[in-house]
Image (cartoon, rainbow, N blue to C red):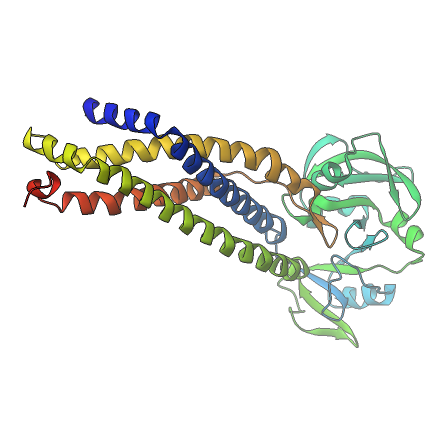
Length: 364
Protein backbone atom coordinates (compact mmCIF):
# COMPACT_ATOMS: atom_id res chain seq x y z
CA UNK A 1 0.00 0.00 0.00
CA UNK A 2 2.81 2.44 0.84
CA UNK A 3 4.37 1.81 -2.54
CA UNK A 4 1.10 2.72 -4.26
CA UNK A 5 0.74 5.90 -2.18
CA UNK A 6 4.33 6.86 -3.05
CA UNK A 7 3.48 6.54 -6.74
CA UNK A 8 0.47 8.80 -6.21
CA UNK A 9 2.54 11.48 -4.49
CA UNK A 10 5.14 11.36 -7.24
CA UNK A 11 2.44 11.73 -9.91
CA UNK A 12 0.73 14.64 -8.24
CA UNK A 13 4.04 16.40 -7.69
CA UNK A 14 4.90 15.99 -11.36
CA UNK A 15 1.48 17.26 -12.44
CA UNK A 16 0.98 19.81 -9.71
CA UNK A 17 -0.61 22.40 -11.99
CA UNK A 18 -3.29 19.98 -13.15
CA UNK A 19 -3.94 18.90 -9.57
CA UNK A 20 -4.23 22.53 -8.44
CA UNK A 21 -6.75 23.32 -11.19
CA UNK A 22 -8.83 20.28 -10.27
CA UNK A 23 -8.77 21.19 -6.57
CA UNK A 24 -9.85 24.75 -7.35
CA UNK A 25 -12.66 23.49 -9.58
CA UNK A 26 -13.93 21.29 -6.80
CA UNK A 27 -13.57 24.12 -4.27
CA UNK A 28 -15.95 26.28 -6.33
CA UNK A 29 -18.51 23.48 -6.59
CA UNK A 30 -18.14 22.72 -2.89
CA UNK A 31 -18.64 26.38 -1.96
CA UNK A 32 -21.79 26.55 -4.10
CA UNK A 33 -23.24 23.43 -2.50
CA UNK A 34 -22.31 24.54 1.00
CA UNK A 35 -23.95 27.94 0.54
CA UNK A 36 -27.10 26.57 -1.14
CA UNK A 37 -27.64 23.85 1.44
CA UNK A 38 -27.14 26.33 4.28
CA UNK A 39 -29.49 28.86 2.65
CA UNK A 40 -32.22 26.26 2.08
CA UNK A 41 -31.93 24.92 5.62
CA UNK A 42 -32.06 28.45 6.99
CA UNK A 43 -35.16 29.24 4.90
CA UNK A 44 -36.90 26.09 6.14
CA UNK A 45 -36.19 27.01 9.75
CA UNK A 46 -37.21 30.64 9.22
CA UNK A 47 -40.47 30.24 7.32
CA UNK A 48 -41.78 26.82 8.30
CA UNK A 49 -41.06 26.36 12.01
CA UNK A 50 -43.89 28.28 13.71
CA UNK A 51 -46.14 26.38 16.10
CA UNK A 52 -49.47 25.98 14.29
CA UNK A 53 -51.77 25.23 17.23
CA UNK A 54 -53.24 28.74 16.97
CA UNK A 55 -55.78 30.16 14.57
CA UNK A 56 -55.53 33.70 13.28
CA UNK A 57 -58.57 35.93 12.65
CA UNK A 58 -57.88 38.50 9.94
CA UNK A 59 -59.35 40.32 7.00
CA UNK A 60 -59.79 37.85 4.15
CA UNK A 61 -57.25 35.12 3.58
CA UNK A 62 -54.33 37.54 3.24
CA UNK A 63 -51.05 37.92 5.06
CA UNK A 64 -52.29 39.54 8.23
CA UNK A 65 -49.53 38.02 10.34
CA UNK A 66 -46.86 39.81 8.30
CA UNK A 67 -48.32 42.79 6.47
CA UNK A 68 -51.26 43.25 8.79
CA UNK A 69 -54.97 43.86 8.39
CA UNK A 70 -57.38 45.97 10.44
CA UNK A 71 -60.08 44.73 12.76
CA UNK A 72 -62.23 46.72 15.15
CA UNK A 73 -62.96 45.79 18.74
CA UNK A 74 -66.38 44.39 17.77
CA UNK A 75 -64.60 41.38 16.28
CA UNK A 76 -62.99 40.74 19.65
CA UNK A 77 -66.39 40.87 21.35
CA UNK A 78 -67.78 38.47 18.76
CA UNK A 79 -64.99 36.01 19.47
CA UNK A 80 -65.72 36.23 23.18
CA UNK A 81 -69.33 35.29 22.46
CA UNK A 82 -67.98 32.01 21.05
CA UNK A 83 -66.24 31.34 24.36
CA UNK A 84 -62.75 32.53 23.42
CA UNK A 85 -60.36 34.87 25.16
CA UNK A 86 -58.83 36.31 21.97
CA UNK A 87 -55.32 37.71 21.96
CA UNK A 88 -55.23 41.03 20.06
CA UNK A 89 -52.08 41.97 18.20
CA UNK A 90 -50.90 44.45 15.59
CA UNK A 91 -48.67 43.14 12.81
CA UNK A 92 -47.40 45.58 10.22
CA UNK A 93 -44.46 46.03 7.88
CA UNK A 94 -43.06 49.51 8.39
CA UNK A 95 -40.44 51.17 6.23
CA UNK A 96 -40.03 52.80 2.84
CA UNK A 97 -40.09 49.51 0.88
CA UNK A 98 -40.47 45.77 1.30
CA UNK A 99 -36.72 45.26 0.92
CA UNK A 100 -35.78 47.49 3.89
CA UNK A 101 -39.00 47.12 5.84
CA UNK A 102 -39.21 46.08 9.48
CA UNK A 103 -41.91 43.72 10.68
CA UNK A 104 -43.50 45.18 13.76
CA UNK A 105 -45.53 43.28 16.31
CA UNK A 106 -47.66 45.10 18.86
CA UNK A 107 -48.75 42.91 21.77
CA UNK A 108 -49.91 43.28 25.35
CA UNK A 109 -46.85 42.47 27.51
CA UNK A 110 -48.91 39.98 29.51
CA UNK A 111 -49.64 38.06 26.28
CA UNK A 112 -46.03 38.07 25.12
CA UNK A 113 -45.29 34.37 25.76
CA UNK A 114 -48.71 32.91 25.02
CA UNK A 115 -48.40 32.69 21.23
CA UNK A 116 -44.66 33.08 20.60
CA UNK A 117 -42.33 31.45 23.14
CA UNK A 118 -38.84 32.89 22.83
CA UNK A 119 -35.35 32.74 24.29
CA UNK A 120 -33.99 36.02 25.59
CA UNK A 121 -30.44 36.53 24.35
CA UNK A 122 -29.73 39.92 25.90
CA UNK A 123 -31.52 42.55 28.01
CA UNK A 124 -35.05 41.98 29.22
CA UNK A 125 -38.53 41.55 27.82
CA UNK A 126 -41.52 43.89 27.89
CA UNK A 127 -43.56 43.79 31.11
CA UNK A 128 -46.84 45.42 32.17
CA UNK A 129 -46.28 48.95 33.42
CA UNK A 130 -43.34 49.68 31.13
CA UNK A 131 -42.90 53.24 29.90
CA UNK A 132 -43.74 53.96 26.23
CA UNK A 133 -41.36 53.63 23.31
CA UNK A 134 -39.60 50.44 24.38
CA UNK A 135 -38.90 47.59 21.96
CA UNK A 136 -37.58 44.06 21.80
CA UNK A 137 -35.90 42.97 18.56
CA UNK A 138 -35.30 39.54 17.12
CA UNK A 139 -31.77 38.32 16.56
CA UNK A 140 -32.22 38.39 12.77
CA UNK A 141 -33.27 42.03 12.82
CA UNK A 142 -30.52 42.91 15.30
CA UNK A 143 -27.90 41.36 13.02
CA UNK A 144 -29.31 43.01 9.91
CA UNK A 145 -29.46 46.49 11.46
CA UNK A 146 -26.35 46.01 13.63
CA UNK A 147 -28.16 47.10 16.79
CA UNK A 148 -27.85 45.99 20.40
CA UNK A 149 -29.54 46.57 23.75
CA UNK A 150 -29.66 50.28 24.56
CA UNK A 151 -29.61 51.40 20.92
CA UNK A 152 -32.38 53.34 19.22
CA UNK A 153 -34.71 51.76 16.68
CA UNK A 154 -36.65 53.98 14.29
CA UNK A 155 -40.21 52.85 13.51
CA UNK A 156 -42.21 55.17 11.24
CA UNK A 157 -40.03 58.10 12.28
CA UNK A 158 -40.45 57.44 16.02
CA UNK A 159 -37.57 56.46 18.27
CA UNK A 160 -37.84 53.27 20.36
CA UNK A 161 -35.21 52.15 22.83
CA UNK A 162 -34.14 48.53 22.47
CA UNK A 163 -34.40 46.74 25.82
CA UNK A 164 -33.99 43.12 24.72
CA UNK A 165 -32.92 40.78 21.93
CA UNK A 166 -34.76 37.49 21.52
CA UNK A 167 -34.69 34.33 19.41
CA UNK A 168 -37.61 32.11 18.37
CA UNK A 169 -35.99 30.25 15.46
CA UNK A 170 -38.64 31.46 12.99
CA UNK A 171 -39.27 34.56 10.89
CA UNK A 172 -40.33 36.29 14.11
CA UNK A 173 -36.62 36.81 14.69
CA UNK A 174 -36.94 39.59 12.09
CA UNK A 175 -39.61 41.40 14.09
CA UNK A 176 -39.55 44.33 16.47
CA UNK A 177 -41.93 43.79 19.40
CA UNK A 178 -43.51 46.79 21.07
CA UNK A 179 -46.53 47.19 23.31
CA UNK A 180 -49.95 47.05 21.69
CA UNK A 181 -50.70 50.57 22.96
CA UNK A 182 -47.55 51.95 21.33
CA UNK A 183 -48.39 50.18 18.06
CA UNK A 184 -51.93 51.56 18.00
CA UNK A 185 -50.65 55.09 18.55
CA UNK A 186 -47.89 54.65 15.98
CA UNK A 187 -50.33 53.55 13.25
CA UNK A 188 -53.25 55.69 14.36
CA UNK A 189 -55.43 52.62 14.87
CA UNK A 190 -57.23 53.85 17.98
CA UNK A 191 -58.68 50.68 19.55
CA UNK A 192 -58.37 48.64 16.33
CA UNK A 193 -55.90 45.76 15.89
CA UNK A 194 -54.52 43.75 12.98
CA UNK A 195 -55.38 40.22 14.01
CA UNK A 196 -56.76 38.13 16.83
CA UNK A 197 -55.25 34.81 17.88
CA UNK A 198 -57.53 32.08 19.17
CA UNK A 199 -56.54 28.55 20.22
CA UNK A 200 -57.25 25.68 17.85
CA UNK A 201 -59.89 23.16 18.78
CA UNK A 202 -62.79 25.43 19.77
CA UNK A 203 -66.07 26.24 18.07
CA UNK A 204 -64.43 27.96 15.10
CA UNK A 205 -62.44 26.11 12.46
CA UNK A 206 -59.68 26.96 10.02
CA UNK A 207 -61.11 28.14 6.69
CA UNK A 208 -64.42 29.32 8.13
CA UNK A 209 -65.74 32.89 7.96
CA UNK A 210 -66.45 34.76 11.17
CA UNK A 211 -68.20 37.74 9.59
CA UNK A 212 -68.31 39.40 6.20
CA UNK A 213 -64.73 39.69 4.98
CA UNK A 214 -63.32 38.23 8.21
CA UNK A 215 -61.66 34.84 7.78
CA UNK A 216 -60.01 32.33 10.09
CA UNK A 217 -56.68 30.89 9.00
CA UNK A 218 -53.85 28.85 10.44
CA UNK A 219 -51.01 30.57 12.22
CA UNK A 220 -47.89 30.66 10.04
CA UNK A 221 -49.85 30.29 6.79
CA UNK A 222 -48.66 33.64 5.42
CA UNK A 223 -45.04 32.87 6.21
CA UNK A 224 -45.35 29.48 4.52
CA UNK A 225 -46.66 31.15 1.37
CA UNK A 226 -43.76 33.62 1.20
CA UNK A 227 -41.30 30.86 2.11
CA UNK A 228 -42.45 28.66 -0.77
CA UNK A 229 -42.00 31.52 -3.23
CA UNK A 230 -38.45 32.23 -2.05
CA UNK A 231 -37.58 28.52 -1.76
CA UNK A 232 -38.50 28.01 -5.42
CA UNK A 233 -35.78 30.49 -6.36
CA UNK A 234 -33.18 28.67 -4.28
CA UNK A 235 -34.28 25.34 -5.78
CA UNK A 236 -33.51 26.83 -9.18
CA UNK A 237 -30.08 27.84 -7.92
CA UNK A 238 -29.74 24.31 -6.55
CA UNK A 239 -30.39 22.96 -10.04
CA UNK A 240 -27.55 25.09 -11.39
CA UNK A 241 -25.36 23.87 -8.55
CA UNK A 242 -26.26 20.30 -9.52
CA UNK A 243 -25.00 20.88 -13.04
CA UNK A 244 -21.76 22.23 -11.58
CA UNK A 245 -21.48 19.09 -9.45
CA UNK A 246 -22.00 16.84 -12.48
CA UNK A 247 -19.34 18.78 -14.41
CA UNK A 248 -16.91 18.38 -11.51
CA UNK A 249 -17.59 14.64 -11.29
CA UNK A 250 -16.96 14.22 -15.02
CA UNK A 251 -13.75 16.25 -14.87
CA UNK A 252 -12.47 14.38 -11.81
CA UNK A 253 -13.31 11.04 -13.40
CA UNK A 254 -11.48 12.02 -16.57
CA UNK A 255 -8.42 13.19 -14.62
CA UNK A 256 -8.21 10.03 -12.50
CA UNK A 257 -8.78 7.86 -15.55
CA UNK A 258 -5.96 9.55 -17.51
CA UNK A 259 -3.53 9.27 -14.59
CA UNK A 260 -4.45 5.63 -14.03
CA UNK A 261 -4.15 4.84 -17.74
CA UNK A 262 -0.64 6.27 -17.84
CA UNK A 263 0.29 3.74 -15.14
CA UNK A 264 -1.45 0.72 -16.64
CA UNK A 265 1.93 -1.01 -17.18
CA UNK A 266 2.82 -0.33 -13.54
CA UNK A 267 -0.45 -1.93 -12.46
CA UNK A 268 0.31 -4.91 -14.69
CA UNK A 269 3.76 -5.30 -13.15
CA UNK A 270 2.31 -4.89 -9.65
CA UNK A 271 -0.21 -7.61 -10.41
CA UNK A 272 2.54 -10.03 -11.49
CA UNK A 273 4.35 -9.26 -8.21
CA UNK A 274 1.32 -10.29 -6.19
CA UNK A 275 -0.50 -6.99 -5.69
CA UNK A 276 -4.26 -7.42 -5.81
CA UNK A 277 -6.80 -5.48 -7.80
CA UNK A 278 -7.34 -3.34 -4.71
CA UNK A 279 -4.09 -1.52 -5.50
CA UNK A 280 -5.87 0.35 -8.29
CA UNK A 281 -8.63 1.43 -5.89
CA UNK A 282 -6.03 2.58 -3.33
CA UNK A 283 -4.21 4.54 -6.03
CA UNK A 284 -7.38 6.30 -7.17
CA UNK A 285 -8.74 6.91 -3.66
CA UNK A 286 -5.45 8.49 -2.58
CA UNK A 287 -5.44 10.77 -5.60
CA UNK A 288 -9.09 11.73 -5.10
CA UNK A 289 -8.47 12.46 -1.42
CA UNK A 290 -5.45 14.64 -2.12
CA UNK A 291 -7.51 16.61 -4.62
CA UNK A 292 -10.83 16.85 -2.76
CA UNK A 293 -9.54 17.58 0.76
CA UNK A 294 -7.65 20.77 -0.17
CA UNK A 295 -10.46 21.72 -2.54
CA UNK A 296 -13.06 21.19 0.18
CA UNK A 297 -11.03 23.24 2.67
CA UNK A 298 -10.64 26.14 0.25
CA UNK A 299 -14.29 25.89 -0.80
CA UNK A 300 -15.50 25.83 2.80
CA UNK A 301 -13.43 28.89 3.64
CA UNK A 302 -14.71 30.68 0.54
CA UNK A 303 -18.34 29.79 1.32
CA UNK A 304 -18.21 30.90 4.96
CA UNK A 305 -16.29 34.13 4.35
CA UNK A 306 -17.82 35.34 1.09
CA UNK A 307 -21.19 33.61 0.69
CA UNK A 308 -22.71 32.48 3.97
CA UNK A 309 -21.61 35.66 5.76
CA UNK A 310 -23.81 37.61 3.32
CA UNK A 311 -26.91 35.69 4.33
CA UNK A 312 -27.46 38.08 7.24
CA UNK A 313 -27.89 40.92 4.76
CA UNK A 314 -30.58 38.98 2.88
CA UNK A 315 -34.11 40.26 3.47
CA UNK A 316 -37.34 39.39 1.71
CA UNK A 317 -40.73 40.78 2.77
CA UNK A 318 -38.88 42.26 5.76
CA UNK A 319 -37.68 38.81 6.83
CA UNK A 320 -34.00 38.09 7.34
CA UNK A 321 -32.49 34.63 7.62
CA UNK A 322 -29.66 33.33 9.78
CA UNK A 323 -27.20 30.53 8.87
CA UNK A 324 -28.23 27.18 10.33
CA UNK A 325 -25.73 24.40 10.99
CA UNK A 326 -26.91 21.02 12.21
CA UNK A 327 -26.21 17.31 11.70
CA UNK A 328 -28.47 17.00 8.66
CA UNK A 329 -26.74 19.93 6.90
CA UNK A 330 -23.26 18.53 7.55
CA UNK A 331 -24.38 15.03 6.53
CA UNK A 332 -25.79 16.27 3.22
CA UNK A 333 -22.58 18.16 2.43
CA UNK A 334 -20.51 15.05 3.24
CA UNK A 335 -22.80 12.92 1.06
CA UNK A 336 -22.30 15.22 -1.94
CA UNK A 337 -18.52 15.12 -1.45
CA UNK A 338 -18.39 11.33 -1.18
CA UNK A 339 -20.69 10.98 -4.18
CA UNK A 340 -18.39 13.07 -6.37
CA UNK A 341 -15.35 11.14 -5.11
CA UNK A 342 -17.11 7.78 -5.51
CA UNK A 343 -18.04 8.42 -9.13
CA UNK A 344 -14.55 9.71 -9.91
CA UNK A 345 -12.93 6.57 -8.46
CA UNK A 346 -15.40 3.88 -9.47
CA UNK A 347 -15.38 4.33 -13.26
CA UNK A 348 -11.59 4.16 -13.86
CA UNK A 349 -11.18 1.45 -11.18
CA UNK A 350 -13.76 -0.79 -12.86
CA UNK A 351 -12.16 -0.27 -16.29
CA UNK A 352 -8.57 -0.91 -15.17
CA UNK A 353 -9.51 -3.96 -13.08
CA UNK A 354 -11.49 -5.43 -15.97
CA UNK A 355 -8.30 -5.59 -18.07
CA UNK A 356 -6.12 -8.70 -18.07
CA UNK A 357 -2.47 -8.59 -17.04
CA UNK A 358 -1.20 -8.94 -20.64
CA UNK A 359 -3.46 -6.04 -21.68
CA UNK A 360 -2.04 -3.87 -18.93
CA UNK A 361 1.50 -4.80 -19.98
CA UNK A 362 0.73 -3.92 -23.60
CA UNK A 363 0.93 -7.54 -24.83
CA UNK A 364 -1.72 -9.52 -26.71
